[in-house]
Image 1 (cartoon, rainbow, N blue to C red):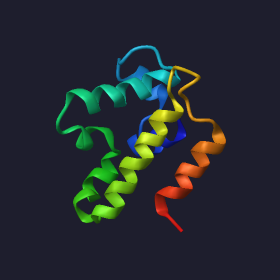
Image 2: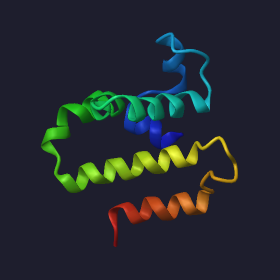
Image 3: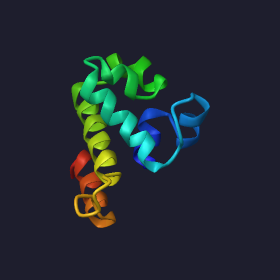
Image 4: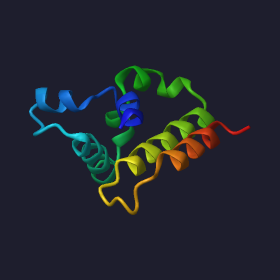
Length: 100
């Protein structure tokens, strides 16, 4: 959840304030998944505004790292416990994002 909060600049409490329903850990992940699935311009809506203002200034490598982290964040919030990343695997994937 923390990864999604950092990348989006949103917190479960923000979802209530914006009238987007009951805030829980799944709400933010559902919001991200829905935008990715239904909106071709999802990157400008998902990532934090401060990141979006700089998105054109970052290189392709950094942009790909942000996308990988987003996928890890979503995998950590998977509703199906059997599919959800455990902490060890999440840490390994995060460390692999930047490489050696």
